[in-house]
Image 1 (cartoon, helix red, strand yellow):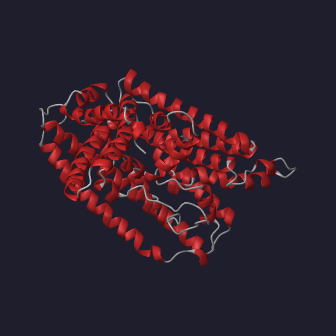
Image 2: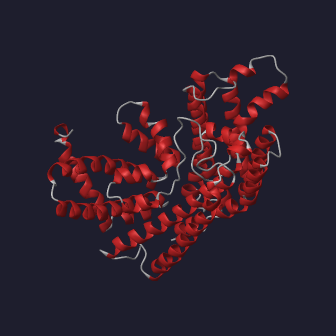
Image 3: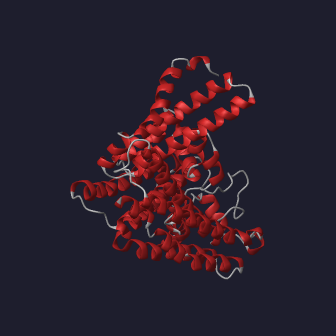
Length: 435
């Protein structure tokens, strides 16, 4: 179970925790109006560069180069072209780096460097910010700098116009994690005055700390249960279902803890909900809506709430662009963005089928299940089934070796997604009767 140990002992949280004093300092200096707008951008940029060097070492150059190139593209191309070229360059660069990971893991049969894994994670977040900004420019929500850079201005003026974009791509509170922050919100938070700072946020950080403490206690208990029992390799028959559910539970607790820490760091720096909110802009969201994720009986709702900012980004970037099979395209792109490991390709394609089946099953059930006892029984049954399917998908996505993926597919756990696949096939023929 080496892949489990690598996941749970990931040191990103240590670097995020080390960035807290600088986030609080930045927020305090902004509240006190102690330095200029350009100094604020430089503080965030310098903090991002320092955090990247500390966490990634020499691999930090793999993040600096695409951030600089994306800034050049944003500042030199027109609104109609910037998104296409920024997207192609960023995804091409990220794919090359993921191929390096594939070469290390599958060809050399070696464990990749932890610093290189942190770099890949930061690159994925950088891709979100680059494409979000380029889409905003393409849609007219953000004014591009290309028009201003064509003027006969000095080099210092050109650099000042490019500074907000470069700072946004590398600002340290979102470098290693956190929900996606739009450029409009980033700019409004940096340029805010002391009179616009909300005062209700005093208790947010202590509450986040209590949440993380509770999650860490649950992780310790669940890890002891997993250690005492048989793993996925040695489990037998129905015992594999409990192993799958508990292992996926440990994964989810780790994600929840990381998301809460990332959200707290953004809040400490002044980028949380209530800071810099523009009229008409979608409100800030936390990636960890734990109550909904653990109580829903709808896989489609779980999909929208799991890592919410990334789900919104994928919907805007892929799903809403039209074309045939938008759901399948979205999950296929998500597998590409995550690195195209065999388990990820299998897991995300399975996830797409489960979401499609979820729509049909619950639409069909709403037409025939009327009495409240049957509705209660149906909800309890579908909740258990949905949670087991989610656990199956999560293990498929997280495993790295083909042997582990084969063990999962060859176990009793495959019954749960197979039931949804059969229902999808049967109800798909009657889809035209549903409205």
